[in-house]
Structure formats: C-alpha cells, structure tokens
Image (tube, rainbow, N blue to C red; front, side, top):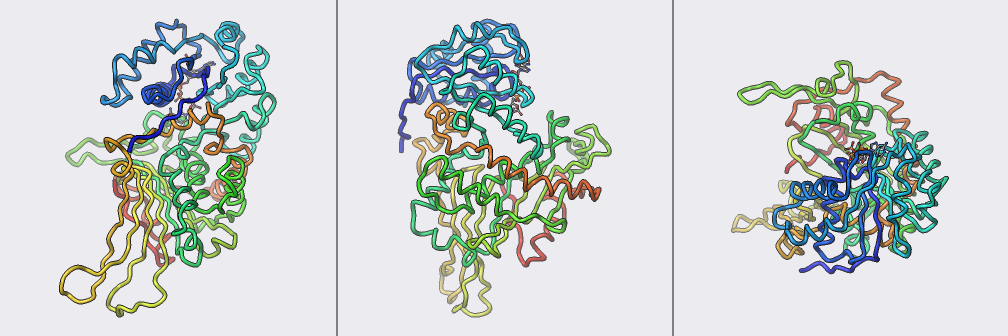
Length: 489
Ligand code: NAP
C-alpha cells in the first residue's frame, strides 16, 4: 500500500539551532524525506539560524553531510538531495543579541506559512520569542515549535508558558512530544475509536491492568550533565509515558479535532492519583565488569557524580481515579542499559469468569500488545486449542499485525515521527502536540512524587546493565499477583 501524500501549503520554516544535533539527526533528514515523498511544494524554504558564522553554501554542505549520515541509503537520491539543499538558507543569529535579525526578516516572504522551530535550549525561548516580535518577523499567524524538556517542574513550566504567551497565543504554539508522532500511537486512536471491537472492553470491568514499558539499552552517553539533573521521571515519565497513558485511558473525544482530543487527555492527567512511596521503584545502573568483553562504567561514573541519587530507571503504579478505570492499575517503567530496546503498551485483559476447560488448563490472559519500537505494530494474543489429538488443551497464539508488513510497499515506508509532526505544524494541526495546560497538569502530578523521594533522601537501587531493572521492580507487580512482560527487542 502506497502512502497518500497531500502537499502542504508553501512555507518558510526557520530552524533556530539549525547546526545542532537534533537538526542534523532528525529535523533535516525528516524534511528531506517529506521532500522526496513529494509533500513539499516548490515554494517551500528552510532557513537555519545559529551563532556559527557560515553562508548558505557552508550550511548546505553541513546539511548534505547530515543527510548522508542519517538518511537510510535506500532514500539517498543524489538529484533529490541536490534539489532539497537548494531550498536551504542560513543566517547567523545569536538569540540573545540583535545581529542577524534584519537579514532574517529580509528572507521571509509574504503570503506563505511562517513557522519557527526553537531547536535550542529552553533558556533561549524567551529571547527568541521576544526578538521575533520586536523585529517584526512573527505575526499572529506564525507558528512556533518548541522542544522538550518543557520545564523541570510546575513552576518552570509555568514560567516557560508565560514567556511564550507574551508573544504567541496557544493556537500558535506546538510543543513537541515525538512519541505522539509515532505511527502506532496514532493507530492506537484509530483502533480504539474506529472499531466497535475494543471499546466495549476498554474499561476496568475487562482490563486487569495496563503495562507501559520504554526500555533502552544505552546509558546516558554524552548527556550526563543534563540527565543527572533530570532523571527518568522528568526525562521520560512526565512527558512520553504520560502521553501514552493518556491515549489509552482517555474517553472518546467528540471529534478528532485538536482541542477535543487534548481536553480528554487533560481529564486523564487530572484524574491521576498521587503515587505513594511504596508504589515507586527507582534504580541506577551499576558498572559492568569486563568478563572477557569491554567493561562499562556505572551511572555515577558516566555522570561524574559519585554521590548521584538520580534514577536511570523507574517503575511505578499509577491509578486513574474515574469510573472507567477504577481498580485497573497502570504500571509504567522506563530505564537505561536494560536488556533490550523496546517500547510497548500492553493491555492485559481479565481472566474469563469461568473456565469450562477444567482446572488443569491454566488460563492465560488475552493481551493486546502495542509495539512502538522496534517493528511498530499490534499483537493480540488469543487462546486457541493446541493442535493435535491431545484433547482440549489450550495455548495462546498471536493475531499479529505488523504495520511494516501490512502497509509498507517495501515493508519500511512508515514516516518518522519528526517528519509527520513538522508537516502537521505547516498544516496547522495541533492534535499531536501538547497544550500548555496538559504540560502543567503533568508536572502538578509529577512534582510531589519527586519531592517525596527527595525529602526522604531515598537512594535508587542498583541494577545490572543488560538486566530488566532492579529486583524490587518485580515485586511491584508480584505483590499484586501480576508480572511484568518480558523486555524483548
Ligand atoms: P545542541 O546540539 O547543543 O544544539 C544547540 C543549537 O543551538 C546549535 O545549533 C547552536 O548553534 C544553537 N545555539 C546555542 N546557543 C545559541 C544562541 N545563543 N543563539 C542562537 N543559537 C544558539 O542541542 P540539540 O541536541 O540539537 O537540542 C536542541 C533542543 O532540542 C534542546 O532543547 C534539546 O533539549 C531538545 N532535544 C534534543 C534532542 C536530541 O536528540 N538532540 C531530543 C529531544 C529534545 P551555535 O553554537 O552555532 O549557536
């Protein structure tokens, strides 16, 4: 099946931080892939801005090198890359100074969509917003895209919202959470709200519990200085896992329209109960001894802070206090240096109320597993009779639907989250972006949890690299008579 491509309106997209890691790894490759797919009209233009001194030719060389590194070989078309690079321009601008803004204004055209991607540290958001206005570059129709982290607590998120609100209204602000741009995540809404099959079962009467896992195999890498001030709760749970939880738990919106969807997500966040200390397990990865291979440093060594109490792993039990979910816990876990790289949501349905197949036939739950990576897709495990003459023995088999197999012409034609989200910005569709009140509500739930372990002086438990996390995390489910799904790549 070939994806339908509808070209967007002509645009000028300005990428502040156009020389940075995110621009090189995600934004430019994403834009190129949309260009290759025919979604970019001939008048579309991309203007990068940063402090480095460079001209258009210099920037095109930088962008060309990024595409060579970060676009899959099968999509590297020399002619197309040349044409794409022609659309790139560069302006030297320091967000905190006045130089370069006039040149940027001179490049902007009238009558096209104006979008400004703030791919810089959040401390510069205010400077950029202010200067885009004082230099008459942004107007009431312009859009701005802002990256995570959106604050580190409720107070800082409020401050960021206030800074942006001085110059832009909410309809102009696109807060990116790239998890929402993933094909499977959007499919989750399609599966829930376009089929009659699941919705009647989507509640505490039939769903025993939900597990949301985002596991990484890498450590903190070069992000140590940032990560040690953040930790898994701020870096992953408050935003990505929270958004996934919302999409599972929310009521059907009256229409697939940005504010209708976001209103329903907000209600879920507001319905989250405080999490008691006994429902949280934090972990920190240990060093890996050489054992014949290469030794790896511990988390504390990685972040160069022997006293660090920051968690590289967290598991917690969340409860949504409303009619639909009363009694159905949502277990969330995420961590670094775990056994495999995987992101998965598992809806674990309840046991059949009565087994007609006898006591010895141990019953296993139906599970709807939604994989975000690797191999985006959904998998519903159902019970069937074990084949053969051995009597009525049961076994579970997957009804598997891998999107790549079912939808991709060459099995790989699923757009990356960033390219989809950037095109949504140009189209003016905010459905997959977080609204300011959503972000604040998420911090309002997160803050007391963090304050709790900080005031108690809790230390994270150690866990071995390549494991499933600390032992205590197993107990979080065991004591409820449940168990985690295996972390598998
Ligand atoms: P980065 O590699 O450090 O790049 C920062 C960019 O900002 C560079 O282009 C830098 O260029 C520019 N810059 C710095 N100070 C500036 C100033 N005063 N005025 C104008 N430009 C300035 O950071 P990044 O990894 O690309 O991240 C950018 C944003 O995305 C951050 O908010 C980050 O948290 C977020 N983010 C990144 C990732 C990722 O995978 N990298 C993922 C999620 C979110 P010059 O030095 O030339 O000015």
